[in-house]
Image (cartoon, rainbow, N blue to C red; front, side, top):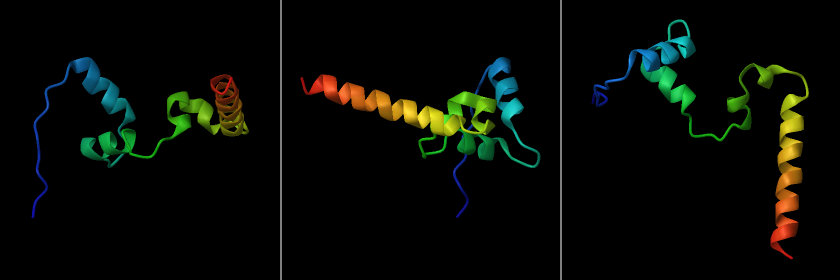
Length: 76
C-alpha cells in the first residue's frame, strides 16, 4: 500500500526556510518529520547552542528549578 500524499502551498520564504533545514539526500517529507518529531526536545529551540558542552544540563537544571519554584507557589 502506497503512503497517501498531499499537495501543500507554501510561500517562497517558508520553502527557503525548509530548504535550509533539508539535509543531503533527505526528502522534504523526511525533513518535516524530523523537525516536527513527536519527542519533546528542549534543545530544539536553541539551535547551535545545543552542541555546547554543558548547555543541555544547564537548561534542564534551570527548568527543574523553575518547576520546583512553581510547585511551591502553587501549594501556598
